[in-house]
Image (cartoon, rainbow, N blue to C red; front, top):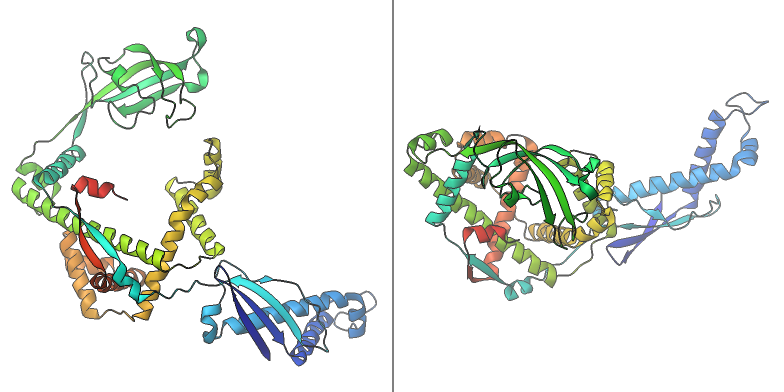
Length: 455
């Protein structure tokens, strides 16, 4: 097929493609389409496959030309986009080319049509801009308190839960189960507010009714009416600014018994450790590795944020919409539901899907731009990794996670996992290069807990 094309770059990473097909190919395609009709169409008075072409053209001429035109467009687009030279001008997979107007097919003339579509954004990273980038690296060290906090968390995870005696009162930190119902005027129960078997920890974050202090001192079987006035900015809009009265019956009180911090606990939670001292040393080692990763993530994110700011480019709407749709579907998976049911749940809670997507837009756009800049730099700098560098990564991962090198290799045995490791190693090499070109200065001193609270 003899095809000539003209590509015009548009705003927002879009392109306009104008294609002209030689009239001989137009006539050939029309005759091929007409031939299919001759073979397939059955008209009264003619045997199938023996209807004269002239009869078909009189009866179905418009449809035959439309089908031929569609075939010409499909075949020519496939031919153009299969050409490796046009890789930068291919449409995004989730944005089909839009035909501006369906032209009329004339077998005596060339056939010309125009489509617009989104293409993958291109960006030229200004290498000189790297010299003007300054990154503040938070100053943080692992302290004895950090190790003790992790030990306390290990205690909590290995605690046993037992029932309190019936004559023992509830205290902060106890796990209580209650039957609860809201009371209306005159003390009548509001049926659709009844909640039996509601379990939470007194003083914890799980009690949406915020009646923790009122339960302290109650015993199993006790019933109490509790009146609570909620703040105007309460997270639950149905309760915000209102005063509500509940009838609460305690049906169960449990207490956590923490294991002793001793050698036996160390042996139970970590097969590599024989003593509590060894467990503490292992905790400190793991926290140090985790801290290094966190600091590297903070520096990398700040570097990308500044690169995005200094090298502006447009993200096509179709790409952004695909990313937002992916986030929505991932959220549905987390809630173990379908995207459609998730939207119904969100609507029932008084929110709108559109508002949530709008709220996500800024972060999603920044993430996409960061990813494109990274991919561009990897390509422009032709960064690659050797088998020896991947072997070194296996060893590093094994040491950081307390695994054997053989187990790490098994984890990355399949092609997809191995490819992920290779890509991650390339990115680490890229960041190592970039950090040498930007200015990294000491930031504020922060605790480990505060460091992990930073976004």
